[in-house]
Image 1 (cartoon, rainbow, N blue to C red):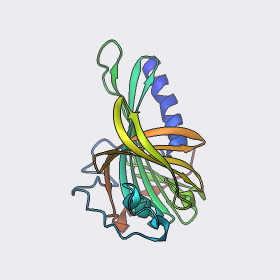
Image 2: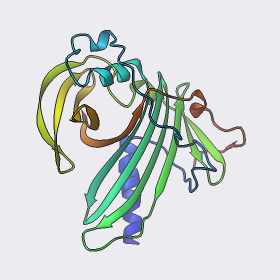
Image 3: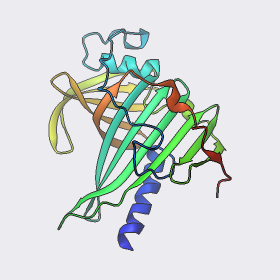
Length: 233
């Protein structure tokens, strides 16, 4: 009972950080599909947003977020009363359209391993609406929403604040920090590889970057034809 109550609270917390609800047990059989190809190299096109950052490690990623077309997979771990909770979020963005897949589960406890309890959320934002998918019942709900226009990461107003070294989940990395129109963001690097992000948009959230790409399949924003719309409870 305690474990299920805890995971419910963590689901609510994660919804505040991303969004959505629904379950999916087999990613091969359900929607949306996980990326089945390596992350494509990100071309350093240097848009106006990144002008002046040519000598900065974050320039390519500022450019990516400014263009608003990206796929990113991140992981968050937090201690919840001695239980380590892992949240993995996959976000596909293309302008004002977003698809967000969030999976939450226990990975370990302070005393002994805990059998994983997972909750997966799938949400699609487009046309000022949020489509919440339940892949188990093959149904979805629709509600008005304008949050997709905010994006997951700041897309403008980057001002270099400074650089240095700091810890990300217990490991020291070099970082670059920027002010933006919607908050602060810190990029963590292992040599030239982006390994983490630290965003401050109301709440400070550290994320491990597992994968990042400029490849976004347009079909990821479509509700499958076999899904049936139902009223939200």
